[in-house]
Length: 161
Image (cartoon, rainbow, N blue to C red):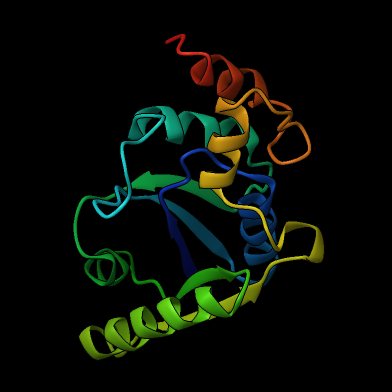
């Protein structure tokens, strides 16, 4: 059984995230969607527990579970016996950063591979940051996020908790 990890902040989860997760689920026996905090990003819109709940409501594949970890990704991969870290790529700027991360992860844990899946054309521009900005400014995000969680995102953008 080959396990892969799809790490990210997922703040909030977008259709682009789900596309990568579902495609990874078709390739690997088990996929762990790993919600991580990202200290380099600004204040999160949703707590980690809320992001886990939103993901669990959206993911339909039976071989996908959601988890969280507050340490080094490769340490988690080692603990879970993962063979791959799956990352989605939208543009060359993504590749530069993700390639550096992949090389670092490989040097720290040689038994794990990084697998890059390119975003589908309709999701090439899509990011959680863009969704938050559009939503906060009153725009329509329905074509960017799963319908099941759009009301939660709109509510949070309005400042309702």
